[in-house]
Image 1 (cartoon, rainbow, N blue to C red):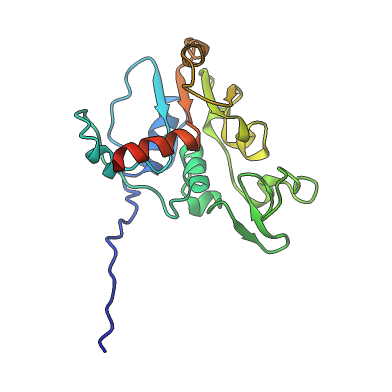
Image 2: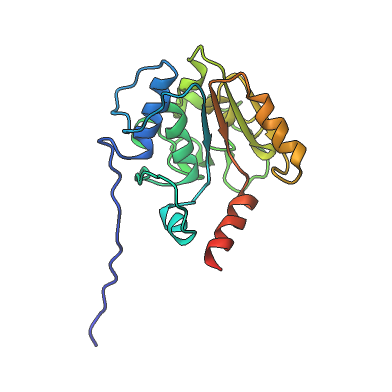
Length: 218
């Protein structure tokens, strides 16, 4: 019996100007922090930048929804895990530079750990490793949001609030929420909170991303 080989249409990350890494370089330089990478070719000459992160919402979903807006197709980084991408996005470093590869990393003297929660794999408590090893001793997470003198605000799910990882990748000013877009005043509050800011970064929770994906599949 002949063996069948399955081939995947693997998209290599384009770090030469057309990936999330290059987008992060553009965001960093728009805030006055120079990078070593090549910024993606987008126009950010407006006074305010609003970045909405839809985890896993790729170009395939945009095509399914027939969204008739101008868009630029870029690649992710490798590995394309949420933890790795978020770290790249707010540090302008590739995964090979910052070291956060995914939800679970192997560290020689600690074993399996979860960088986003900085705890041992399987534990339901955040930041239990802070007394054993400093986060930045293992990962090079140097966020440009902390270096810029411009006002930037991040709006994050409550489950990410005040963790070591969140504090490292975000700037000095961020808000958290439990359920976003559930009521009109919540949305208005987030917009008004960032009215004086140059950059507003919004990370919808996983439940919102799931709703959009189901809409695309119907």
